[in-house]
Image 1 (cartoon, protein in one colour):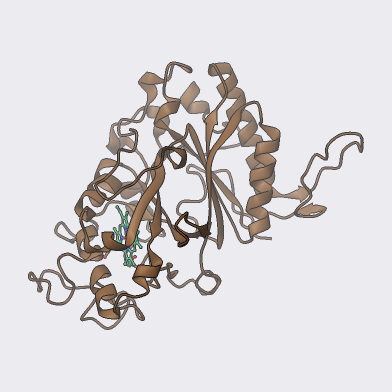
Image 2: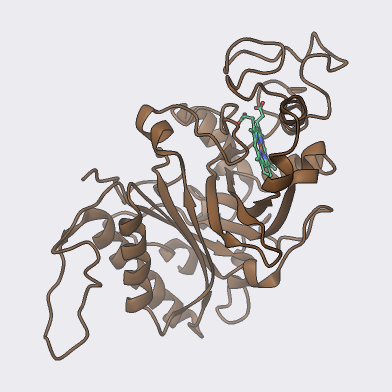
Length: 368
Ligand code: HEM
């Protein structure tokens, strides 16, 4: 029944613990002017406030379509639901006169060398990240929003995500579909100062005033070539990541959170120079060269057209600066050995709106 507060300086769903289930859904905005966009944000604020707080499912007139899908029964429980709202670069165009208000790093996601981007799986004016403890809760939330806003939002792409139940229950690092612990090297979300520095936009960032308290969100839909991976020797799997598969320890070390000791190993005898962890986070300028917080989910979605498992990762990172966060890190990863087993095909760059209060709803600062 857990309720994650919707109100706050920052939106929920970023530094709050990641529950087991997620839906990522991007929309094209159908609003045609600023007034209609303001109405969209007002209604979205109202729906999210209701859904995250819970309460009796509204009952209506039997001659009309039901007011609630009913999939959660008579009582809608909060169930740890968070709905995080982010906007894409395309929202800042002439339709709404927002060109001058765009966060300065918010751009269209261009393909990296190993990408095979499919336009139908990319971008969007608006992105919702819905997370909760159970699948029916995120489905109920998405259906509620779509039902209430057909004149305002047209779905563009959607991907379901999940985390292993055992890791969520015990608070240990979730294991991804390659079988590796994923998230070990993340900065601590309990460290407010570090989060202000790396995740939240603030006065240090020279962004438009309205953007303070927001964050850049990079989403990458990454297919894993699992049939190939599952025929790859354990030793190679481990050198690709730079970590021991079972313990998550940096190669040559004992425990998951041990320091990899890069300074004492300039040739990469322990953790190879080419490995994912060492390229992503070379620790050349202290602990966090990769200035981002990862909050990814696994996905599993049927078969590809060639009959292979369509599974992988909804990679998600939050950062105060998209360039020094996701983009620079991805550039260090370009041509990593792991690319043999991964194919990014979708996602986009978004900006998470600042948080809400009883007085100020989503997007109000942006439109003021
Ligand atoms: C570390 C998996 C994509 C950035 C790791 C680790 C694993 C992993 C298993 C080691 C454990 C950990 O520290 O979390 C994957 C997979 C990916 C992927 C399967 C997709 C195919 C990316 C991307 C980025 C990224 C796209 C950013 C551009 C990082 C960073 C670390 C890391 C910063 C931390 C390294 C450290 O602190 O030592 N990743 N990752 N990863 N990854 Fe990824």
